Length: 266
Image 1 (spheres, rainbow, N blue to C red):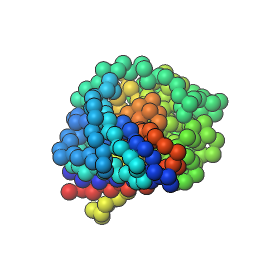
Image 2 (image 1 turned 60 degrees about the vertical axis):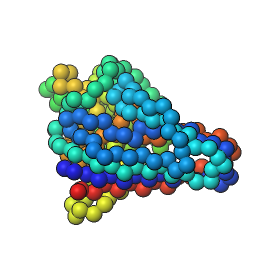
Image 3 (image 1 turned 90 degrees about the vertical axis):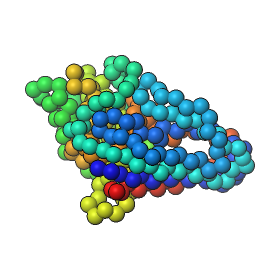
Image 4 (image 1 turned 45 degrees about the vertical axis):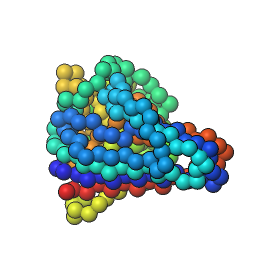
């Protein structure tokens, strides 16, 4: 599948700030499931700084914007060729050992309910366990936008049984780690409509390390593994660690965001 992605984030400040420094994880890596073609990042009024590939195989760019700044836009325009690998991440170059992803974070700290859920799942092998954990989380919750926030933890999601893709991913990561499976959060895009029209499609899912098979993606919110509709951006311990945009504004102005993402088949 050939996918065109446009992604714009506008940062506005009620009082102009002196400067803005950003770290962008907004360039997909090429691997067997995707090949990145023309890909452009533009930070309005910004100056590109250092760039590097981190240990997880993600491309990181630094940008600086000098003020005074009232509004700044980060824009992406790119093409990606994708194919279905049944969720298996093949040909992705990284150096971080999988066991690092057993690390617990605030968002993925297990409570009694998550621990009980994780141990209630019986499976024939590790891959089957990962599939069954993903299915169990998908069945116990309802996809409802707007009822959780960026800081909502897996335990809070488990308590209210409602949330969005970020929450499902955190819950699966938590349960998988309880069962001793290295797991991580993945940010990206999803082409999810059938009529060829652009669709708002920033998305997130989890990857679980399954022995010799390596990293396998699981989208508990959609009860599937990533296929040709998915574009993988980057990964981390949780949503905050895998955030596509991180930054710091120098000033006292309150910040507001407007994010627009479209994915369409070419």
